Length: 135
Image (cartoon, rainbow, N blue to C red; front, side, top):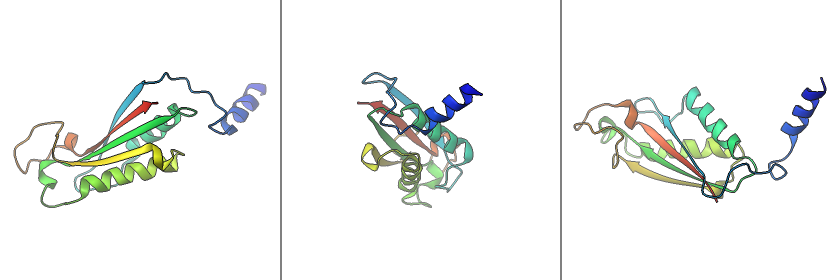
């Protein structure tokens, strides 16, 4: 029972009190995948964001989020890549990451993960690439 109390106390400490366990320049990357035409992250992606934010408690971290679409969304959904990074940004902020530490950019279809012909659907291209860098 004593260890549970210690764990609960540790969990209640503000982020500023916790020491960063990463070195300056350390990087962590994740891809968050979206359904066709959607800018709402699924549960597995939301969990990835939560873990990533929790990993860096107490660290000075910059998050870079790049939104991507697949070739089939190019004409049908203008602004979808931006909507995806905005969704990721809001979810990071909900985890306590300051807005000033999150950079977002809409890559549209400029750098697909998988090269496909025009109009082709590929779930690996419907993503937000998230990179966290310890400063």
